[in-house]
Every structure is written in C-alpha cells, then in structure tokens.
Image (cartoon, rainbow, N blue to C red; front, top):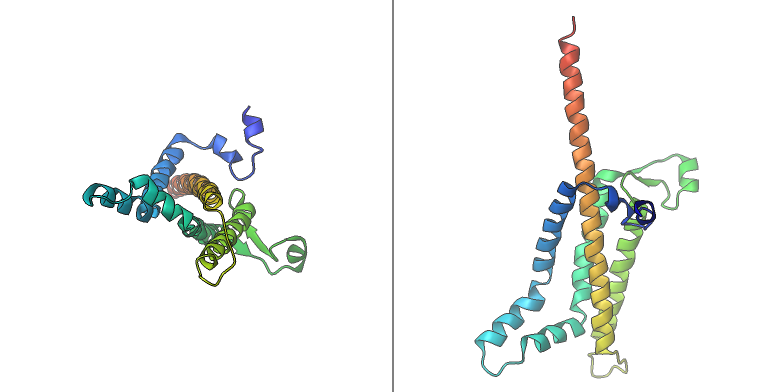
Length: 199
C-alpha cells in the first residue's frame, strides 16, 4: 500500500514522514487556515450575533465566497511556497548542458517534488488571478459577463483546499529536511570532537 501511495505526485513522500514533522505541520496548517480565512468567518459571526435582523452567518459567508475571495486567499497561501522552496533548496547552474536538459533553464531543486511545487504554485496563482478578475469584471454595470455563483464557490473551495494540501506537504518536507540537517550537523560535531581528542 505504501509503495502505491509513494507514487502520488507532490504528496507521495508524506508516507515516510515522521509524526513530529506531521504534527508540527498540522499546527502550522491550522494557524494558516484560521488566519487566512478570518475575513470570511469573523465578520459573519460578529454580525449575525450582534446585529438584529442581519442575514444569517451562512448567507454572509457564502456571499463572500461567491465574490471569489477564496481565490485571493489561495494565492496568498501558496505564493510564498515558491520563495520557501527556491530560497534554501534551489540553485542555478550556468552549465550549458544542464540548461539544455533542464526545463527551468538551469534551476535545480533539492526539495521533494520541488519542480512540481514550483509549477503548481504558479498555476494556482494564475488561476486565482484569472477567476478573481472574471468575477470582478462581472460586477461592472456595462459588463455582459455572467458567472455562476455556485461555480465560483465550488471552484474556489477546491483551489483553496489544494493550496492548503500543498502548504501542508511543503511544511512536512521542510521539517524533515531541517531535522536531517540538524542530525548531520550533530554527527559532524561529534566527529570533530572525536577527531580533536585523537591521540
């Protein structure tokens, strides 16, 4: 079963991750979800309980999602993944052979599924920008564009959940790599200590 799961793009190596990395990433995911969606749920909760005769919490939240707000939050979540992956785990090689055979013209990633995360992050941001733009255009009085609110709700939720899944996976992999680097540093320090104490 694990061998089958390992073949899943982007998320396959989660099978081999340690629980400490997963737990830390779940906490990061929870915090990211709560704060990234705060504009969607906080105002409806406040208004529905504090102002008499106001629309229900569900109606207010749905109207916010129908305006394609979740697309913006998706881009805000997944956009920083590009920086996170390229900052410490990518390098640019000037070698012509590498550039010739590399789809990113010499950029190589030392991160699980680094190239895929890089591509999907850009694609999600572009989809979010396009859908939000279309939604915005449809609100202009002179516009002939009509877009289904139900479509926006469903598609934005799907994109947002995918962004959360990517954030979680990148967080787990980053934790694993950081722990690995710490272990290597610890081994190196132990080796240097023994080397210094040799006779």
